[in-house]
Amino acid sequence: MEKTGAYGGDLRIAMPRARDTRMMAVYGYARLVGYDRDYNLVPDILERVDSEEGRVFTFHLRPGHRWSDGHPFTAEDFRYWWEDVANDKDLAPFGPPPFMKVDDRLPAFTVIDATTVRYAWDAPNPLFLPALAAARDPYIYRPAHYLKPFHAKYAGREAMEEEAKKRRLRSWAALHNNRDNLYDLDNPDLPTLNPWLNTVRPPSQQFPFLRNPYFHRVDSAGHQLPYIDRVLMGIADGKLIAAKAGAGELDLQARNLFMTHIPFLRHAGGGQRFRTWLWRESLGARVALFPNLNVADPGWRALFRDVRVRRALSLAIDREEINQVIFFGLGKASQNTVTEGSPMFRGDYRDAWAAFDPKQADALLDAAGLDRRDRDGVRLLPDGRRAEIVIETAGEDSEQVDVLELVHDSWLDIGIKLHTRPSQREVFRNRIFAGETQMAVWSGVENGIPSPDMDPAEFAPTLQEQYQWPKWGQYRETAGSAGEAIDVPSAKALFNLYQDWRRATGTEARRTIWEKMLAIHAEEVFTIGIVCCTKQPVVVANGLANVPEKANWAWDPGGHFGIYLPDTFFWADAATRK
Image 1 (cartoon, rainbow, N blue to C red):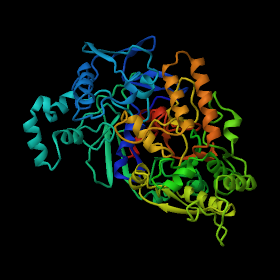
Image 2: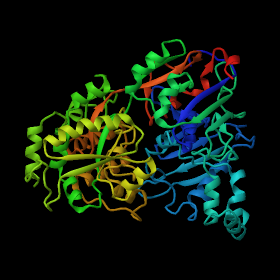
Image 3: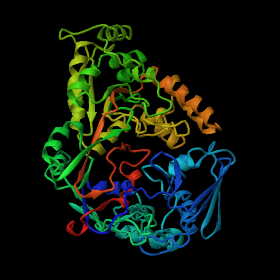
Image 4: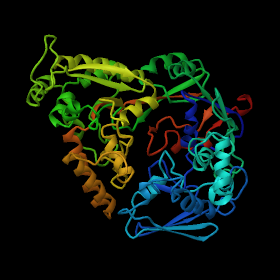
């Protein structure tokens, strides 16, 4: 860190939803292994990791490490998760998460002693350590001493079912899961290894996070971290967060701040109360469109699966106009792909089908069977309906709505009528998963700066949360128990290449597979990127030290602020910051 700090003070931040208590698990970034600022994996909670051929991993815990309630953190916490959570059919119907499987086989798990555990696969597992360093920690350990009283194996199934009934929960498993929320941080009684622990159960308008007295990190002088006493998370309407930041009511804020806020923030702060720094975004695209290839409507499903339609919609977007009007010219016209910060970047990927060419877009739509129009100039689908696309938003990002207004005008010129439908995030996501959404708008791939050894899962159908093919992703996540099997050859090719990457050994072999995936993804335009390489405004109160002025703003890898270790941030005038 830049300098050794001093203890004390409160740090005020804001989030738009009470559920965002989970962001403190992200910002705290206490991981078994984590990324340093150069994106190298290094031990954090673990004292060290021994790896043999990328398939056998031996974890060495730090002797004397304790949970936030003072109870020892030991191998028992890993055993409890593996045997009593991940492999308990009531708690985990689909078994351990996909990154724990190699060719559908689970590892041999061994407790060697109180501070040593081992995971051994028959073949290399390149996903294992990166998954543990992710922004959303999978938590392959649990506070066994706290959770055992809620587990049927230890407290008795009949007693637990009766207790669940009293609490109006459907089963003992629901009772256990209600207590077991290390990521959500919504149970103040649940011990944590994070730098700060929540003290208030939702719902609330403010969540005070207090210093963890047993946090494992120390500074270079041997002082235990974190420096700051409390993080005060206020809940506010997302549309008001920029105003609160401008009024000096927040000390460290980036969430719900957008490039359109930069002039206001620069004027409001004036250098007297806070600074507004511009961090480089690491997204594949600041704004991207996601045609739902699994949409329930058979007419639109067929059209979105026609690459000519996807290419036409992309060619009919004036990205340069959007960059100038919405992003002050600070971004770059781009598809949704890796950016210049990645060693796999190629201009061909960024520019594929991204030129503004309405004439070619018209020709592609005609060739795809949309060659008839009504008297308003709107194209007609083969079944006679007007070519009207409803793009759904989570209602949280005004930039997305502004971008869609410009897309509306250029799409109308090629005979496609665009409508925008805002909703709340949970509704937004559930509609996509159910196939009710034609197209969604969201940010692009989270990791726009990957190395060949980083997981390419975002470019293949692997997760339900991929809005362009949610049912294919669900099928993979549930081992075929839910969702739909991939039935588009190019998407199947991406999935097969992803499987090849998981089996590959060596960086160069993985790089070759990455490049094949990126080339297919660029040509098939499964997602439609608009602008990349924009800036994230970060408001930093004067007096708050060790916050870098130049940095990347990335969800994964990095956990937004997490990679810069907020436990090392401190107030130069701590005594006045209560």
